[in-house]
Length: 346
Image (cartoon, rainbow, N blue to C red; front, side):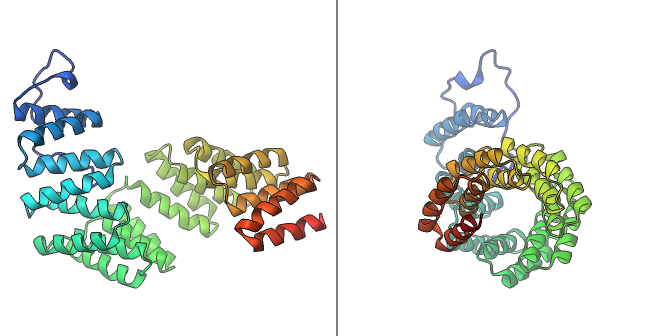
């Protein structure tokens, strides 16, 4: 994403000192329109930036930077599919446009067009053979395909070319996690942070490993470091909740699961884990409410349905619990049978 959000280097002109809102200023001068577009992007008015870059390209269709900038503007608005043709056009106009190659490849990975992304990475490498970016992206693609051994070879190749790349060190950690080599992953994430101490995903990934290992203090330190950089990161709050849940500190877990729900209200996992914790504390009404919140987001979530059935059974409402068994039979017959047996014995 950093590549996709690359600054429009050397393209943003000096301020002109408008006496009116520049987003409403009209001009037939292409360079003035480009300036308006760039300024709109800089103040995060992406809709205006998109409109102005399109207007500029209607007058000057052969400027690769304008196609690239429009592509980036579309991507930051989560219109990634729409941005891809503009990266391709920028490359067709300037074959050695490294940022456009990077953004094209990342965009194709984002929309899960992995074969196209692999082709783009290979073509990028032909143009920029000393750049570590293509090998890094191949590693990312192979990681998505869970081809961890091949992903490792590619990220190692990337690091030979760009040994001080924090992004490549982070990817190395991801690959080692995929290979279940946690000690190597920890070292890779620490190396990443040695290059860029503000790489918050490396802090969070360290937290995830320590949480899995039930190393509470290390997990808390790592997640808190992540949250110091991204204070509303729901995944870090969830990780903190998991870390405390693992050591049966359920009140602390509730605090962080609630924070995860507040940060990401439509995340079914956060609601489910919050409900699990209420269930452990025998706060069944609160657990039922949270399981229902999870199921409102994901009606077929098996662990939430199972938990809902357990809580109804614990409250003595066997009819409601049996209704959950009936729902589960359609989705996961084995889970339904486990719940039926539990209800029968309660």
